[in-house]
Length: 350
Image (cartoon, rainbow, N blue to C red; front, side):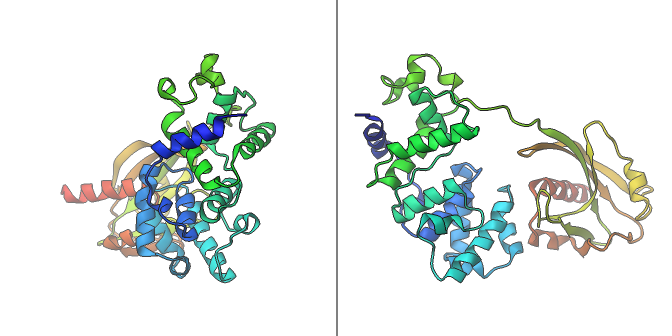
């Protein structure tokens, strides 16, 4: 008999992380935590979960607000499609008249894939389905000595079947949370705590000296570096923002005047580019250059400018003029927040 599962559950009983969404069976609270924790560490996600639960304590409350309100509260967390999906799914749930309680129904929610559905289903409703994420891949690959790439079709199928075979049908919530915690606390990507591990005697990777080699992952697509230029326009106490269009990063968030993105190595004449909107003579200031911002599939290098024209510039119709103090009402990417901070500092220093 394989002792993996009982050993894991015993470890979990002594080492489980105390988290507020684990103190409830409310599917709304659990679903909210899982969406927030996609691509986000618990330490950061916890604060956002508390804010959302305080402001919108029920799915009905969340479903009734605007996308701008959700994006504003989500600001700084990144991967903003999650926020848009969160609102869309909340409206789906309200339209259903109940929170979906089968795996098939849960998967119909916007932004919910196999992992999130398994987590919600097992934790909120006791459904006997195993979760498979980076932590699970790592723990299983090391313990069983599996070198099949985790991001290959074969690997995904293999690890899903293995995790399911180890899950005790009567304790799916405990098992799944134990796997998450074990990978996050004990069997970490770097410097795992092997000497104090309950699997030290039976772990294949440890016995064979392959802990650092597993799990195996196929090479990713090369990350592109792009150059972006943001212009903070200040005219008689006003500035401008526009909503980013669909089909691009930061969809639905707001940004100041921007110039077209350039590939690495390309340059743009900012003065010439702005000349179609107005005069830049003696009123254009470079606030910062080559500010590095890392996204999943690209690296942005941003230049920040402050433009204080003597006459109101004729900008495209999608830009909205507003009092500078009103910009805090709009959800913006972290990169734009940095520009705002630089613009405020420049103003205060005068």
